[in-house]
Length: 228
Image (tube, rainbow, N blue to C red; front, side, top):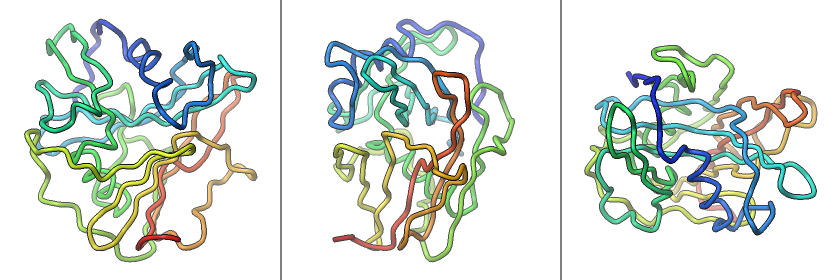
């Protein structure tokens, strides 16, 4: 169970993301930097209690049209071997001390727990409350999915399985499966997110738009194999 500490972070997560987001191919805001606000998200528990796992939604009002980004992050007490390219930045946590924040799509612990969520063996947790399930995050599983491993350790080495494009990040998984992270979030047209044809699982949830209204959309989609 992840414990949420009421303490300080220097720099803050949004300060780290302000510098990091413009380096991503799916970033659509001002090249000089985003204007970010935290707009939602959820957490997953690492069964070993070693890695913090957060799926943050951040809205950006720097461009001609507001954007919402899904930013999966992992927080570690030591560097992840082989993941220098995925480092978002380092922070000083008021309770835990130095923390290394990574693009979670490159972290084997996050990928393992996201598959467990889709498969129904993990529960989404509230972003800012300890031991509180987030019932607004929904998931489905309509077929076989790769089995989550026996919980990768915090010292597991990162592998280059995540590929970014202009809309999101694709993870190549075992057994031929592909996990698609929707980085640029789109509100569901009818208010109810529906997985696309061919998907065998998905995760969806809400976030707050800059005007104060609430949207819901797809966060992640699991496909059974490589797609053309």
